[in-house]
Length: 156
Length: 385
Image (cartoon, rainbow over all chains, first blue to last red; front, side, top):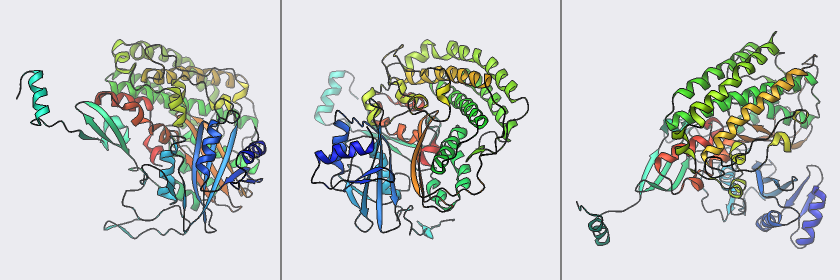
């Protein structure tokens, strides 16, 4: 199925949620409080069957918002889908999809670690690439490299 | 100390004997972790209850660096992610930027890229197979594998001057044309290499000790593999017939006649360590087939004509994926119209494949963790980026 068809299919199922369609990318923009329900739907729907989460990326959009992008693939049906969630940078909360696709566990930890959005409902949201006591989120556009880390000079 | 089993059980029941779970650190400097990875093993006696991986010892901020670089300057950084498969990393990134800019590359470039990518796949699988054997305790096959890998690295060195980190596939083309006699060298290598596969089969893969150590160990069922996003030999070892070169074709893979290798559970259960290992062995043969067909119709031409003078992709974003030796390597590139990428996210197959380790290790013994980790075939440079 193409993105537009999937969008029409989903808006029929979630009329109240406020899903939006972005022509340019193309992708479906989902509100942060609905991403878990929409994810479960696209995974279990007979017509969609998106069982494979290829990639989950955190992005700092540099306009006061953060984005999370879900690239999905269906192994049985062979089609693809892109979902996007946009959250404000000062209150970056969204639902976790860690229990929908198990691979989202580490991807969400990485997005939290590097970009700093908080996935509500994630069972083990710790840093993953940076040290556990690192401060700040390096992939934010306004990130400043700390001068010292635990008394050691950061050489950059 | 109590001497009979009954007496021991009595001691445990009375609280005189400690039966707590034990935490054991494997790594960060452990030979079987193939780099710097720390596995925190929670043990009940010698059985593993839980595995908690701790990563990041090799984190080099690839994605942060990429934002400060121009598009071509990112390519050497991609080399250093999966340093055993640098050609494939270059290929994925070059494809992503080419698709953003709408560049069509010349025929000859496509052919050279395919031959290089498949040679690199063989080289990478040789390391995986050799070191896996060594983890289990078979040292000789390791030498056979590394000997043949060296022939491939020699070919790469003659073409682009580097043995491991090539910076070879550029946006729209290649850094160099192949050297004189390249086709002869590759054909000669394939001729010499095919008997090695049989040697490795005889020495290692059908060796009784090796099968005992790997069959029925670390079984990964297909639905779990898909849910954890496993790809490459991990996914195919579990019996899922899925290969990006065929199912999401890129470059010119659709022109060649080859097979996707799938684990069948010949030695034990579908999806065990032996299956994952054998998928790699069979894939090397398929790579040979692809290279031979590519050499037959190798075209002449200019390799630099599609390289753009200025690389400034229009505003937009793209997710491109290629089949790395370890699985699906994805690049999510966002362009804001300037000469630096706004965001480059690399989805490394090793990172995702490693996340399943806890699931498939539970209940096994410590010695099996070594076998399981070896069969996942991670490269820490890519896990940590």
